[in-house]
Amino acid sequence: MVPILTLAADGTDRVMLGGAYVVDDFALVFKGFFLLASYVTILMSMDYIADGDYKEAEFYFLMLISVVGMMVMSSSRELITIFVALETISIPTYLLAGWRKHDERSSEASVKYFLYGALSSAVMLYGMSFVYGLSGSTLLADISVWAGNGDIGVIGTLAILLTLVGFAFKISAVPFHFWAPDTYEGAPTPVTAFLSVSSKAGGFVGMIVLVYAAFAPDPAAWQTFMWVIAAASMTVGNVVALRQKNVVRMLAYSSIAQAGYMLVPFAVAPDGDTAVAFQATIVYILIYGIMNLGAFACVIAIARRTRSANIESFSGLFYTSPTLTVALTAFLFSLAGIPVLAGWYGKFVVFASVLDAGNTWAIVLGVVVAVNSVIAFFYYGNVCRVMWFHKPVDGDAHPIRVPAALRLGIALTMIGTLVVGAFPQLVAHVSDLAPFAPTFGG
Amino acid sequence: MTPSLDYHALAPELIVTATLTIVLLVDLFWDQVGKRQVAHCDHRRAGGDGSDLDSGC
Image 1 (cartoon, helix red, strand yellow):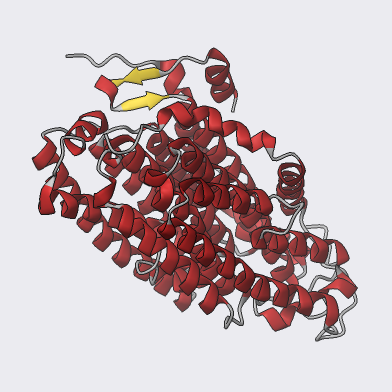
Image 2: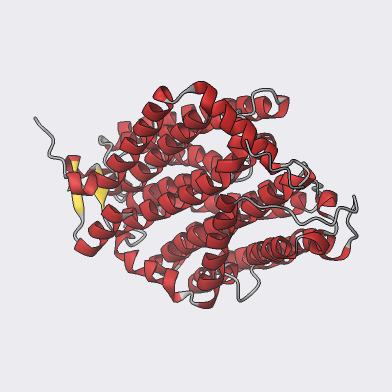
């Protein structure tokens, strides 16, 4: 974190490799986020990996490679660098998803994730090749000039959409989400947390950079696509999550729905103040990362005793481990957007971007967000109901022993959730990054 | 053409890369048997069912 802080204190944007690699405030915010998220993920992993007798060094090695990819992604301003960063994020996670070598579900998770990932990379690269062919450059600044030249034609629109499809897979947006539930459930739980927070945020950073720095001047090419996948992700994610019996699988569908909320500002950005929409996506990613990591840390702690992530196995947890119960309840309520936990501010900025756009389609999307926020409360609330009001299943009255590293991970994310919820201006400062966002429509 | 690199700007990536290299090197020279004992020791300490099984290993 020290070089990130010194670079932030320095305050000057550093441009390298002819504009392909830029270290500005936007990049620094996300580099800091990825580092902190990986610290927490490693805290969650330490006892899990040691207890399971998995290979430890290789596990952390692969996780750190993926983190390097995320840091490169936040500085990339060129198509090839973006693609290399995305693959650096993804390839180690294909292996990590299958880390439980003797578990068929883990192997299935890995293979499924790899196949879908390879397919989406191919589609994205195909789109990028068209973008390069039409614009004559891989630099986003040059592509922005091409997109602002007027009519980019059907091929241009197709090129942009194919490029964005690759990122839609990475963030598990509907209908590119099929890998997520099985992969999240089969992978080791710390890896699931890593995939649903850091890896997803890495995909979003790539999408932000491409949309705002390259494709922004021609919103007609991608705005409808963003609207559809935002609405579909929220609705499918939340409705299917209602039927889940397994907490990890429920959190997988929840993360699909959360990706939908994060896509809403993209869909409404061209109709309102770009800075408001830009800020909304960034704030939501940062807040989502904190609270979702906390929720997964609690699930890992609880599953140490239950040996299961089935919701019914969490019955009566309040009677034996009240602190863990309160912590998981707080994280789930935060994901649902209940004040004064951090999640409320994420929902608030999303609604602010919708109201700022103000047209009919934006308002309709706002209604979809509102309805889905209510639906989400039912499945988050169901887990809390089971923990607080059901009787313990096995009559075991011993409290769950939580390892120190995991306890620290839960404490850090809880502090983040409470502090950001009470003092949202701490993350609202990312609006200072708004100059990064160009004006839409050329 | 030699690209000009700003190593201060690249420091976060360089430090994480150095860390992951160190992780691999430490693993390479760390006695495999020792690692296995630590893993099993932790496993017993965790107790599976949440009970205290401190074994003094």
